[in-house]
Length: 201
Length: 201
Image (cartoon, rainbow over the protein chains, first blue to last red):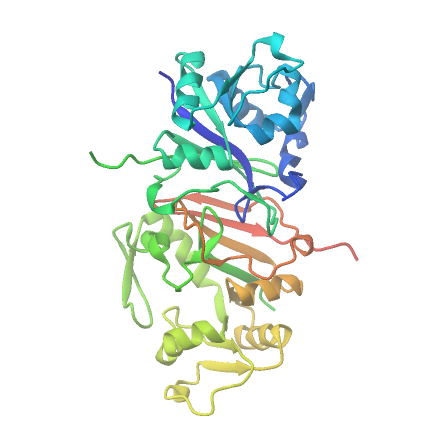
């Protein structure tokens, strides 16, 4: 089974979006360079620095499946069935939609019985590849349940003041992180990866 | 005149202490190595990694004065008149204490007419050296007033969940930070320094 990571662009004060879900300047690094990265759906491409492009390709190269919450699914209409990263995605929800216009793509999988089941389904779909859990409530639940191996943060030099937090609904005492295994400064972002330390026993 | 910096150890979610002012595990890096650093008052010394010790000495080597809030002054009783960093400190307060047991040390300077005056007094005392403004409310006021040249963050891989924020009372729109000029991973901390971008005009 592949590893489970959480990943998001985060402000210096710990937010992944404004309250209205607008990412503000958190995504500036997606257009901070000249290296074109083609995606599987809209936006069709973005433009990274060579350093960020290397990090990005390494991350995407081992990615097999995403786990997202119902809010993100609804906001994006499930990316019309094709996520920009080109991988299938598991939607953690209380109730699967009865009919969805893009269900025929086969990329969306709805799980209604909790975060453990959602991550298990994603790992089944990912095989030996990694599962990425979207930051926010879903990542908080996964961290609290001890399901996460690595916390990836694209740290952006902005202050949001308030908004949606990366570490929402997390009991801090339940999360012990090690020193970062990745620290890559780039333009408008520093890519960092922190291993989650497993509790003894 | 020397530059003005804010500096603090900060959790991944943006806090510099718990609500009860306990720093929790934010200061673990002060005892994460074997290099003894001697201070001017209690604690008499701490023990850094070689990497953190180099960064520390560079920071301290150019430091001339501190600006702190009244809360920190009261909690520490003004470090009994001698700050561990061995520099004078300006206390921003509504009212200077009428008598203070350690006033004879001459290291504490009380300013009652606002953050601009406090930073100006500190720069006068620091000469060509840097002024460091304590994180939290005072740093927030200094940032908002456009008085800060650099934001130094000792980023610690812990999650606090709640507490005192590094960027308290800051209007995010008033703060524009550049890419970090310093990114130094060490044990239990990554030392980072972000320049404050001046607004045009």
